[in-house]
Picture (tube, rainbow, N blue to C red):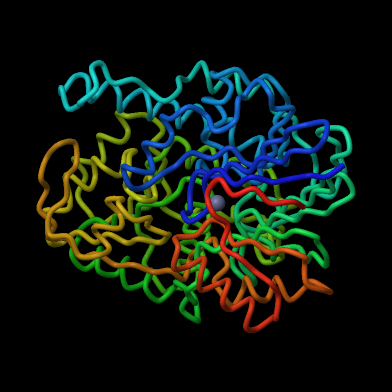
Length: 459
Ligand SMILES: [Zn+2]
Protein backbone atom coordinates (compact mmCIF):
# COMPACT_ATOMS: atom_id res chain seq x y z
CA UNK A 1 0.00 0.00 0.00
CA UNK A 2 1.20 3.51 -0.71
CA UNK A 3 0.37 6.76 0.96
CA UNK A 4 0.00 10.12 -0.73
CA UNK A 5 -0.23 13.71 0.33
CA UNK A 6 -2.04 16.53 -1.47
CA UNK A 7 -1.47 20.21 -0.72
CA UNK A 8 -4.63 22.31 -0.47
CA UNK A 9 -3.52 25.75 0.67
CA UNK A 10 -0.32 26.96 2.34
CA UNK A 11 1.47 26.08 -0.90
CA UNK A 12 2.79 29.20 -2.60
CA UNK A 13 1.16 31.19 0.19
CA UNK A 14 1.39 31.35 3.99
CA UNK A 15 -2.16 30.62 5.10
CA UNK A 16 -4.99 28.14 4.52
CA UNK A 17 -3.07 24.93 5.27
CA UNK A 18 -4.92 21.70 4.48
CA UNK A 19 -2.81 18.70 3.58
CA UNK A 20 -4.67 15.53 2.71
CA UNK A 21 -2.95 12.30 3.73
CA UNK A 22 -4.47 9.37 1.89
CA UNK A 23 -3.63 5.72 2.46
CA UNK A 24 -5.29 2.57 1.17
CA UNK A 25 -7.69 2.65 4.10
CA UNK A 26 -8.11 6.20 5.26
CA UNK A 27 -8.05 9.90 4.60
CA UNK A 28 -6.62 12.17 7.28
CA UNK A 29 -6.49 15.95 7.01
CA UNK A 30 -3.27 17.42 8.36
CA UNK A 31 -4.15 21.01 9.35
CA UNK A 32 -7.44 22.73 8.69
CA UNK A 33 -6.48 26.35 8.30
CA UNK A 34 -8.30 29.42 7.14
CA UNK A 35 -6.97 31.64 4.35
CA UNK A 36 -6.06 35.14 5.52
CA UNK A 37 -4.76 38.30 3.89
CA UNK A 38 -5.53 39.28 0.30
CA UNK A 39 -9.17 39.29 -0.75
CA UNK A 40 -8.53 36.67 -3.43
CA UNK A 41 -7.11 34.34 -0.78
CA UNK A 42 -9.89 34.99 1.71
CA UNK A 43 -12.32 34.19 -1.07
CA UNK A 44 -11.02 30.63 -1.07
CA UNK A 45 -12.54 30.13 2.40
CA UNK A 46 -15.92 30.42 0.72
CA UNK A 47 -15.34 27.85 -1.99
CA UNK A 48 -16.52 24.29 -1.51
CA UNK A 49 -14.11 22.38 0.76
CA UNK A 50 -11.30 20.82 -1.32
CA UNK A 51 -12.01 17.47 0.35
CA UNK A 52 -15.48 16.08 0.99
CA UNK A 53 -15.63 16.43 4.82
CA UNK A 54 -17.67 13.24 5.31
CA UNK A 55 -14.89 11.15 3.74
CA UNK A 56 -12.28 12.23 6.30
CA UNK A 57 -11.43 9.86 9.14
CA UNK A 58 -9.61 12.38 11.32
CA UNK A 59 -8.03 15.82 11.47
CA UNK A 60 -4.58 16.56 12.93
CA UNK A 61 -3.74 20.10 14.04
CA UNK A 62 -0.16 21.25 14.61
CA UNK A 63 -1.22 24.32 16.58
CA UNK A 64 -3.99 26.75 17.37
CA UNK A 65 -3.29 29.65 14.99
CA UNK A 66 -6.28 30.33 12.77
CA UNK A 67 -4.33 29.80 9.54
CA UNK A 68 -3.83 26.22 10.80
CA UNK A 69 -7.08 25.52 12.71
CA UNK A 70 -9.63 28.15 11.71
CA UNK A 71 -11.41 26.17 8.99
CA UNK A 72 -12.34 23.36 11.41
CA UNK A 73 -15.81 24.79 12.28
CA UNK A 74 -16.62 25.11 8.58
CA UNK A 75 -15.46 21.53 7.97
CA UNK A 76 -17.75 20.36 10.78
CA UNK A 77 -20.61 22.48 9.51
CA UNK A 78 -20.12 20.79 6.12
CA UNK A 79 -20.30 17.28 7.56
CA UNK A 80 -17.04 16.24 9.26
CA UNK A 81 -17.75 14.16 12.39
CA UNK A 82 -14.42 12.43 13.15
CA UNK A 83 -11.87 13.12 15.89
CA UNK A 84 -9.63 16.19 15.85
CA UNK A 85 -6.24 15.36 17.38
CA UNK A 86 -3.91 17.99 18.81
CA UNK A 87 -1.69 18.61 21.83
CA UNK A 88 -3.29 19.54 25.20
CA UNK A 89 -2.05 23.14 24.93
CA UNK A 90 -3.56 23.45 21.45
CA UNK A 91 -6.83 21.92 22.69
CA UNK A 92 -7.02 24.57 25.44
CA UNK A 93 -6.20 27.40 23.05
CA UNK A 94 -8.66 26.47 20.30
CA UNK A 95 -11.39 26.42 22.96
CA UNK A 96 -11.04 30.18 23.01
CA UNK A 97 -9.80 30.79 19.47
CA UNK A 98 -12.47 29.03 17.41
CA UNK A 99 -15.44 30.66 19.19
CA UNK A 100 -13.61 33.97 18.92
CA UNK A 101 -13.07 33.47 15.19
CA UNK A 102 -16.77 32.64 14.87
CA UNK A 103 -17.74 35.79 16.79
CA UNK A 104 -15.53 37.92 14.53
CA UNK A 105 -17.23 36.34 11.51
CA UNK A 106 -20.67 37.01 12.96
CA UNK A 107 -19.82 40.58 13.97
CA UNK A 108 -18.35 41.40 10.59
CA UNK A 109 -21.42 40.03 8.81
CA UNK A 110 -23.69 42.03 11.17
CA UNK A 111 -21.64 45.16 10.70
CA UNK A 112 -21.69 44.90 6.92
CA UNK A 113 -25.41 44.26 6.95
CA UNK A 114 -26.08 47.28 9.19
CA UNK A 115 -23.88 49.57 7.12
CA UNK A 116 -24.98 48.12 3.82
CA UNK A 117 -21.23 47.74 3.17
CA UNK A 118 -21.60 44.46 1.35
CA UNK A 119 -21.97 43.25 -2.19
CA UNK A 120 -23.70 40.18 -0.82
CA UNK A 121 -27.14 40.62 0.69
CA UNK A 122 -27.28 39.57 3.40
CA UNK A 123 -23.62 39.07 4.40
CA UNK A 124 -23.16 35.69 6.14
CA UNK A 125 -20.52 34.44 8.57
CA UNK A 126 -18.18 31.70 7.29
CA UNK A 127 -19.24 29.74 10.37
CA UNK A 128 -21.11 30.45 13.57
CA UNK A 129 -20.37 30.14 17.27
CA UNK A 130 -22.57 27.03 17.28
CA UNK A 131 -20.40 25.47 14.52
CA UNK A 132 -17.29 26.22 16.59
CA UNK A 133 -18.82 24.64 19.71
CA UNK A 134 -19.73 21.50 17.74
CA UNK A 135 -16.17 21.29 16.41
CA UNK A 136 -14.69 21.58 19.90
CA UNK A 137 -16.65 18.53 21.04
CA UNK A 138 -14.63 16.47 18.52
CA UNK A 139 -11.24 17.48 19.95
CA UNK A 140 -9.06 14.71 21.42
CA UNK A 141 -5.92 16.05 23.12
CA UNK A 142 -2.79 13.86 23.01
CA UNK A 143 0.32 14.61 25.08
CA UNK A 144 3.62 15.39 23.36
CA UNK A 145 5.69 12.31 22.47
CA UNK A 146 2.77 9.91 22.94
CA UNK A 147 2.11 7.75 19.90
CA UNK A 148 -1.48 7.45 18.67
CA UNK A 149 -3.23 6.06 15.65
CA UNK A 150 -5.78 8.34 13.95
CA UNK A 151 -6.42 5.74 11.21
CA UNK A 152 -5.40 2.17 10.32
CA UNK A 153 -1.67 1.98 9.45
CA UNK A 154 -1.16 5.61 10.45
CA UNK A 155 0.85 6.34 13.63
CA UNK A 156 1.46 9.87 14.81
CA UNK A 157 3.19 11.69 17.56
CA UNK A 158 3.50 15.38 18.35
CA UNK A 159 6.88 16.90 19.21
CA UNK A 160 7.52 20.36 20.69
CA UNK A 161 7.99 22.99 17.97
CA UNK A 162 8.38 25.95 20.36
CA UNK A 163 6.33 28.29 18.13
CA UNK A 164 3.45 29.00 20.57
CA UNK A 165 1.97 27.04 23.46
CA UNK A 166 0.99 23.57 22.28
CA UNK A 167 2.66 23.99 18.90
CA UNK A 168 3.78 20.68 17.45
CA UNK A 169 6.01 19.15 14.88
CA UNK A 170 3.82 16.35 13.50
CA UNK A 171 5.64 13.08 13.04
CA UNK A 172 3.59 10.60 11.00
CA UNK A 173 4.29 7.04 9.88
CA UNK A 174 1.77 6.07 7.18
CA UNK A 175 1.97 2.67 5.46
CA UNK A 176 5.55 2.40 6.74
CA UNK A 177 6.66 5.74 5.30
CA UNK A 178 7.67 8.56 7.64
CA UNK A 179 6.27 12.03 7.02
CA UNK A 180 7.57 14.85 9.19
CA UNK A 181 5.75 18.19 9.13
CA UNK A 182 7.51 21.06 10.87
CA UNK A 183 4.26 22.88 11.61
CA UNK A 184 5.23 26.46 12.37
CA UNK A 185 8.72 26.18 13.75
CA UNK A 186 9.71 28.21 16.79
CA UNK A 187 13.04 29.81 17.52
CA UNK A 188 16.12 29.10 19.58
CA UNK A 189 16.92 30.99 22.79
CA UNK A 190 13.85 33.27 22.83
CA UNK A 191 11.73 34.24 25.87
CA UNK A 192 8.99 31.98 27.22
CA UNK A 193 9.06 29.07 24.75
CA UNK A 194 11.43 26.11 24.57
CA UNK A 195 13.68 25.41 21.58
CA UNK A 196 12.22 23.19 18.81
CA UNK A 197 12.75 19.42 19.27
CA UNK A 198 15.33 17.91 16.98
CA UNK A 199 14.10 15.37 14.41
CA UNK A 200 16.68 13.14 12.74
CA UNK A 201 14.95 11.38 9.87
CA UNK A 202 12.03 11.42 7.47
CA UNK A 203 11.12 10.00 4.09
CA UNK A 204 9.11 13.10 3.27
CA UNK A 205 9.59 16.44 5.02
CA UNK A 206 7.32 19.47 4.92
CA UNK A 207 9.13 22.57 6.14
CA UNK A 208 7.49 25.92 6.79
CA UNK A 209 9.09 28.90 5.04
CA UNK A 210 7.28 31.99 6.33
CA UNK A 211 10.67 33.64 6.89
CA UNK A 212 12.53 31.43 4.41
CA UNK A 213 14.10 34.45 2.73
CA UNK A 214 14.90 36.46 5.83
CA UNK A 215 17.15 36.69 8.82
CA UNK A 216 15.72 38.17 11.98
CA UNK A 217 17.77 41.07 13.28
CA UNK A 218 20.45 39.84 15.63
CA UNK A 219 19.84 40.84 19.22
CA UNK A 220 16.44 41.15 20.79
CA UNK A 221 13.41 43.42 20.48
CA UNK A 222 14.03 45.11 23.82
CA UNK A 223 15.76 48.30 22.57
CA UNK A 224 12.88 49.12 20.19
CA UNK A 225 10.27 48.32 22.84
CA UNK A 226 12.13 50.61 25.26
CA UNK A 227 12.16 53.35 22.60
CA UNK A 228 8.44 52.92 21.87
CA UNK A 229 7.44 52.97 25.56
CA UNK A 230 9.63 56.02 26.23
CA UNK A 231 8.10 57.88 23.27
CA UNK A 232 4.64 57.21 24.69
CA UNK A 233 5.75 58.38 28.15
CA UNK A 234 7.45 61.51 26.79
CA UNK A 235 4.33 62.49 24.80
CA UNK A 236 1.95 61.41 27.60
CA UNK A 237 0.32 59.43 24.83
CA UNK A 238 -0.52 55.92 23.74
CA UNK A 239 1.53 53.07 22.48
CA UNK A 240 -0.71 50.69 20.50
CA UNK A 241 0.59 47.20 19.96
CA UNK A 242 -1.46 45.05 17.58
CA UNK A 243 -0.57 41.57 18.73
CA UNK A 244 -1.74 38.03 18.32
CA UNK A 245 -3.54 37.19 21.55
CA UNK A 246 -1.65 33.96 21.75
CA UNK A 247 2.09 33.79 22.05
CA UNK A 248 3.06 37.31 21.08
CA UNK A 249 0.98 38.87 23.85
CA UNK A 250 2.53 36.70 26.57
CA UNK A 251 6.02 37.31 25.20
CA UNK A 252 5.39 41.08 25.21
CA UNK A 253 4.06 41.01 28.75
CA UNK A 254 7.08 38.96 29.82
CA UNK A 255 9.50 41.44 28.20
CA UNK A 256 7.69 44.52 29.57
CA UNK A 257 7.88 43.05 33.09
CA UNK A 258 11.57 42.21 32.64
CA UNK A 259 12.38 45.71 31.28
CA UNK A 260 10.52 47.31 34.15
CA UNK A 261 12.30 45.16 36.74
CA UNK A 262 15.62 46.05 35.15
CA UNK A 263 14.74 49.76 35.34
CA UNK A 264 14.96 50.18 31.56
CA UNK A 265 11.38 51.52 31.29
CA UNK A 266 9.29 53.36 33.90
CA UNK A 267 6.32 51.47 35.35
CA UNK A 268 3.73 52.44 32.73
CA UNK A 269 0.11 51.27 32.73
CA UNK A 270 -0.27 48.28 30.42
CA UNK A 271 -3.78 47.45 29.24
CA UNK A 272 -4.45 44.03 27.80
CA UNK A 273 -7.55 44.88 25.76
CA UNK A 274 -8.28 41.41 24.50
CA UNK A 275 -10.62 38.86 26.07
CA UNK A 276 -8.77 36.16 24.17
CA UNK A 277 -5.40 37.55 25.23
CA UNK A 278 -6.51 37.50 28.85
CA UNK A 279 -7.69 33.89 28.61
CA UNK A 280 -4.61 32.83 26.64
CA UNK A 281 -2.36 34.31 29.32
CA UNK A 282 -4.18 32.19 31.90
CA UNK A 283 -3.70 29.11 29.68
CA UNK A 284 0.01 29.88 29.28
CA UNK A 285 0.29 30.08 33.06
CA UNK A 286 -1.45 26.70 33.35
CA UNK A 287 1.10 24.88 31.15
CA UNK A 288 4.43 25.65 32.87
CA UNK A 289 5.89 22.43 31.43
CA UNK A 290 6.12 24.16 28.06
CA UNK A 291 8.00 27.21 29.35
CA UNK A 292 11.73 27.67 28.91
CA UNK A 293 14.10 27.57 31.87
CA UNK A 294 14.20 31.36 32.42
CA UNK A 295 10.41 31.66 32.59
CA UNK A 296 10.27 28.69 34.95
CA UNK A 297 12.84 30.46 37.18
CA UNK A 298 10.70 33.63 37.32
CA UNK A 299 7.72 31.54 38.43
CA UNK A 300 9.90 29.65 40.94
CA UNK A 301 10.83 33.02 42.50
CA UNK A 302 7.14 33.50 43.23
CA UNK A 303 6.63 36.12 40.51
CA UNK A 304 4.01 36.05 37.79
CA UNK A 305 5.97 35.89 34.51
CA UNK A 306 3.31 37.66 32.41
CA UNK A 307 2.25 40.46 34.80
CA UNK A 308 3.93 43.92 34.71
CA UNK A 309 3.47 46.09 37.84
CA UNK A 310 0.69 48.34 36.49
CA UNK A 311 -1.22 45.71 34.59
CA UNK A 312 -4.90 46.09 33.68
CA UNK A 313 -7.19 43.83 31.73
CA UNK A 314 -10.22 44.84 29.67
CA UNK A 315 -12.44 41.78 29.40
CA UNK A 316 -15.63 43.55 28.31
CA UNK A 317 -16.43 45.95 25.48
CA UNK A 318 -17.27 48.61 28.07
CA UNK A 319 -13.84 48.16 29.67
CA UNK A 320 -12.37 48.65 26.22
CA UNK A 321 -14.42 51.79 25.52
CA UNK A 322 -13.31 53.31 28.82
CA UNK A 323 -9.76 53.38 27.43
CA UNK A 324 -10.94 56.01 24.92
CA UNK A 325 -11.43 58.52 27.72
CA UNK A 326 -8.12 57.88 29.48
CA UNK A 327 -5.11 60.17 29.19
CA UNK A 328 -1.78 58.60 28.35
CA UNK A 329 0.79 57.49 28.83
CA UNK A 330 -0.15 53.90 28.48
CA UNK A 331 0.35 50.78 26.45
CA UNK A 332 -2.59 49.02 24.81
CA UNK A 333 -2.06 45.47 23.60
CA UNK A 334 -4.99 44.31 21.46
CA UNK A 335 -5.79 41.97 18.59
CA UNK A 336 -5.72 41.27 15.84
CA UNK A 337 -1.99 41.08 15.20
CA UNK A 338 -2.31 42.17 11.54
CA UNK A 339 -5.09 44.71 12.29
CA UNK A 340 -7.50 42.67 10.17
CA UNK A 341 -10.17 42.81 12.89
CA UNK A 342 -10.65 42.96 16.64
CA UNK A 343 -10.47 45.76 19.17
CA UNK A 344 -7.21 47.23 17.87
CA UNK A 345 -9.23 48.68 14.96
CA UNK A 346 -11.18 50.98 17.31
CA UNK A 347 -7.95 52.20 18.90
CA UNK A 348 -6.31 52.71 15.51
CA UNK A 349 -9.32 54.60 14.17
CA UNK A 350 -9.23 56.90 17.21
CA UNK A 351 -5.47 57.32 17.70
CA UNK A 352 -3.84 57.09 14.23
CA UNK A 353 -4.69 60.74 13.38
CA UNK A 354 -2.82 61.89 16.54
CA UNK A 355 0.87 62.41 15.87
CA UNK A 356 1.73 61.69 19.52
CA UNK A 357 0.55 58.10 19.09
CA UNK A 358 3.05 55.29 18.56
CA UNK A 359 2.11 52.00 16.88
CA UNK A 360 4.48 49.09 17.32
CA UNK A 361 4.19 46.05 15.05
CA UNK A 362 5.77 42.99 16.55
CA UNK A 363 4.75 40.24 14.16
CA UNK A 364 4.45 39.06 10.59
CA UNK A 365 2.17 41.28 8.46
CA UNK A 366 0.69 39.37 5.52
CA UNK A 367 0.25 41.06 2.15
CA UNK A 368 -3.05 42.90 1.90
CA UNK A 369 -3.61 43.41 5.65
CA UNK A 370 -3.96 46.82 7.30
CA UNK A 371 -0.86 45.96 9.32
CA UNK A 372 1.17 45.54 6.13
CA UNK A 373 -0.18 48.81 4.70
CA UNK A 374 0.76 50.73 7.85
CA UNK A 375 4.15 49.08 8.08
CA UNK A 376 4.77 50.02 4.44
CA UNK A 377 4.04 53.69 5.19
CA UNK A 378 0.38 54.20 4.21
CA UNK A 379 -0.72 57.80 4.88
CA UNK A 380 -4.40 56.84 5.07
CA UNK A 381 -6.13 53.64 6.14
CA UNK A 382 -9.66 52.27 5.59
CA UNK A 383 -11.21 51.29 8.93
CA UNK A 384 -14.93 50.51 9.24
CA UNK A 385 -15.52 52.12 5.86
CA UNK A 386 -13.83 55.37 6.97
CA UNK A 387 -10.69 56.91 5.54
CA UNK A 388 -8.45 57.47 8.57
CA UNK A 389 -5.38 59.74 8.21
CA UNK A 390 -2.17 58.27 9.62
CA UNK A 391 -0.09 60.78 11.60
CA UNK A 392 1.12 58.37 14.28
CA UNK A 393 4.68 57.08 14.36
CA UNK A 394 4.83 53.47 13.14
CA UNK A 395 7.56 51.18 14.44
CA UNK A 396 8.24 47.60 13.40
CA UNK A 397 10.38 44.84 14.78
CA UNK A 398 10.80 41.33 13.43
CA UNK A 399 12.98 40.37 16.40
CA UNK A 400 9.92 39.08 18.28
CA UNK A 401 8.82 36.72 15.55
CA UNK A 402 7.53 33.35 16.67
CA UNK A 403 8.85 31.84 13.43
CA UNK A 404 12.33 30.52 12.81
CA UNK A 405 14.18 32.59 10.21
CA UNK A 406 16.25 31.08 7.40
CA UNK A 407 19.28 30.45 9.61
CA UNK A 408 17.13 28.83 12.32
CA UNK A 409 15.22 26.70 9.80
CA UNK A 410 18.56 25.44 8.45
CA UNK A 411 19.77 24.84 12.01
CA UNK A 412 16.74 22.64 12.67
CA UNK A 413 17.19 20.83 9.32
CA UNK A 414 20.79 20.24 10.35
CA UNK A 415 19.44 17.81 12.99
CA UNK A 416 18.58 15.29 10.27
CA UNK A 417 21.12 12.48 10.01
CA UNK A 418 20.45 12.05 6.29
CA UNK A 419 18.50 13.85 3.57
CA UNK A 420 14.80 13.03 3.34
CA UNK A 421 13.87 11.53 -0.03
CA UNK A 422 11.67 14.57 -0.64
CA UNK A 423 11.58 17.96 1.07
CA UNK A 424 8.80 20.45 0.33
CA UNK A 425 8.61 24.09 1.37
CA UNK A 426 5.15 25.11 2.58
CA UNK A 427 3.69 28.16 4.37
CA UNK A 428 5.51 30.86 2.46
CA UNK A 429 4.95 33.61 -0.03
CA UNK A 430 6.57 32.43 -3.31
CA UNK A 431 9.84 34.36 -2.88
CA UNK A 432 10.31 33.16 0.69
CA UNK A 433 9.67 29.51 -0.18
CA UNK A 434 11.96 29.66 -3.21
CA UNK A 435 14.74 31.26 -1.18
CA UNK A 436 14.55 28.51 1.44
CA UNK A 437 14.52 25.81 -1.26
CA UNK A 438 17.66 27.33 -2.79
CA UNK A 439 19.37 27.53 0.60
CA UNK A 440 18.49 23.89 1.38
CA UNK A 441 19.82 22.70 -1.99
CA UNK A 442 22.97 24.80 -1.73
CA UNK A 443 23.86 24.36 1.94
CA UNK A 444 22.57 20.86 2.67
CA UNK A 445 22.74 19.36 -0.82
CA UNK A 446 19.18 17.98 -0.45
CA UNK A 447 16.59 17.67 -3.17
CA UNK A 448 13.93 20.22 -2.33
CA UNK A 449 10.86 21.71 -4.01
CA UNK A 450 8.31 24.39 -3.27
CA UNK A 451 4.97 22.65 -2.77
CA UNK A 452 2.44 23.63 -5.43
CA UNK A 453 -1.23 24.06 -4.66
CA UNK A 454 -3.20 20.86 -5.38
CA UNK A 455 0.03 18.98 -6.06
CA UNK A 456 -0.10 15.32 -4.99
CA UNK A 457 3.05 13.52 -3.87
CA UNK A 458 3.77 9.90 -2.93
CA UNK A 459 5.33 9.50 0.50
ZN1 LIG B 1 1.50 29.77 13.75
